[in-house]
Image (cartoon, rainbow, N blue to C red; front, side):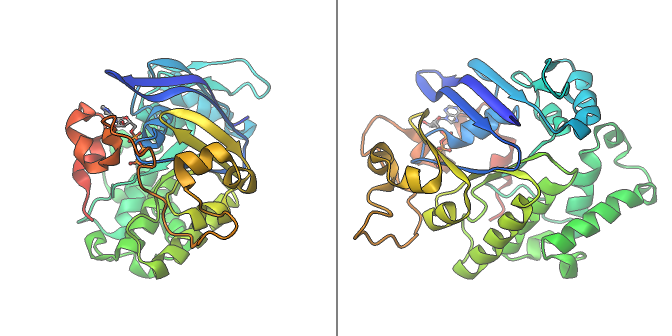
Length: 322
Ligand SMILES: Nc1ncnc2c1ncn2[C@@H]1O[C@H](COP(=O)(O)OP(=O)(O)OP(=O)(O)O)[C@@H](O)[C@H]1O
């Protein structure tokens, strides 16, 4: 198992955003996390990447054996918050208390729901900086002569080819289209060759033509990476996922192949609201509404309104350049 959570829980005062989640991801899988606004999806990603510390439960990450050296140099060496755990590969780490830097060094990289790019840097520089930073021990050299880092440029250039932005290498990032920025975010997450890529709503705000390009990119990346995807566009989710996990009020209410999840009564009631049922429109549009239909102060329905309650841990909130 590449990633495993056991009883993973996050409470914010009286709100239990993630509630006793037992989840596992096999290496090579593309698993989508779906659920109504406020269901706990982003909080789940924040726990996996060390942006938030769990209130309860454990997270264990077991990158492929050939990455053992990185796992060793990652959480354990980087500060001791994570500890090596014995298992088949010898490289499994307990990342329950790991920081974002430590989870990245262990091999978990992430693209953000909210644009997280340096707008005034070139497209190439954005990926190059990420490649350099992902090397951990090289990071302190960030401001030294860039010619020392030709390998970072080579990696960044290869990534731009892959994400279809090679022709925009010298373009100032803020001049890209929204869809291109989302692709670049995936490129930034790819820098450093992650074992697990977490993509948070990569098609949000992208035009319909742009969505096809971003989806093609996700499929391409998923061919040689393990991917977890938060996505509200059900057509995309049903089309590209190997597996779908459904969160509702912090609990994992379903987990299985797309066809099973689509037919699951609890999921239909909590989130899909008839999507994919025979005779339904099933037009693939986003099913993003708060399907709770309740008035329980579900602040997650207003994604942008909860920044003040974040206690400064979701640093990218202020960086939304969309
Ligand atoms: N830092 C925080 N402080 C307090 N409450 C929070 C914080 N982050 C999230 N929450 C609350 O936790 C719950 C889950 O929010 P989360 O953003 O994880 O949901 P989500 O499923 O990602 O929603 P969306 O689809 O709108 O992005 C919500 O009730 C939200 O208000």
